Image (cartoon, rainbow, N blue to C red; front, side, top):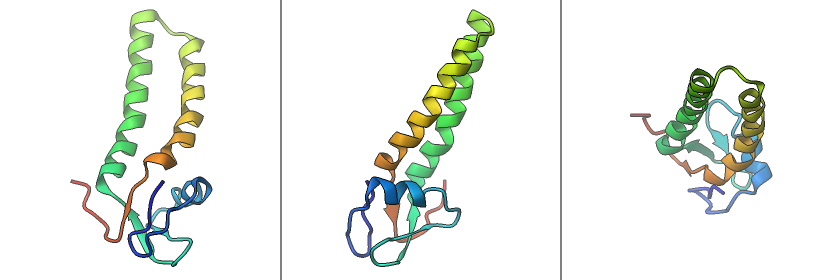
Length: 98
């Protein structure tokens, strides 16, 4: 779970999950200071959907089209949203992606 860089309070899973869907930074629930996702977390969250789509396309290419892979994807997406808040890291400054 992320820890605010200003007040050093650790956020709960629910607080983190709610704040990850904001577009321009996240507000700390304790001190109301603006926090931003680190570049490492933003890169990882951009690469994961690409990897999932690539795996599905490769499985369809090698094994033929199947609803099994489609339903596997539907099972992986909620799992990603449940696990994602555990890997969120925040900083006081908005970092460049590259």
